[in-house]
Length: 205
Ligand SMILES: [Zn+2]
Image (cartoon, rainbow, N blue to C red):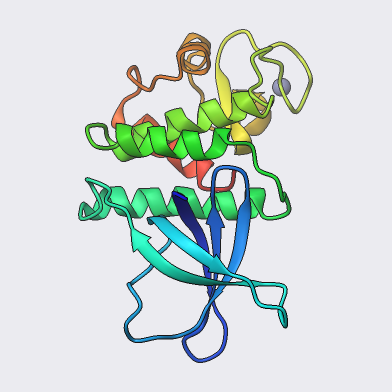
């Protein structure tokens, strides 16, 4: 099954606990150290087998095959991708049955990143995620004072809207954010704005 590694924890010696996001499950697996194992890393797309063990409730990860991603040797793309993927672990770790929306979202994003700037593509992907989870706030009411936002809008963690004057943060033209939320496109944003939104996103999904 094609899946993504979203977390790796070292346990003893070189053994690893590897968390894998697949179509409908989040698997927590154990990988024993072995010099002949293929290298694994956060964000890698893999195919794998699981071996259950009666003595332990955690399955053993084996036969890992890394699936190719065209941009995997592009350092900036890989770096941004890994930072985004890591956020999925804290976001999904307590959910057992995962909607296949998440793996589809990552597949689509990975494909888009062949041609597109990684930060722009990731922010667009995140807007889709918020919409899917029903927390894309398109009523444009301020999180802090509950009043309607009519001109400058600021986004805080989770891209929640506030008045610029209420959160004392960077303002955007309201129409620009409305367009972003509606079309899930970063086309109208300049590099500095992309960087600003990227840093908000990195605070957590
Ligand atoms: Zn306000």
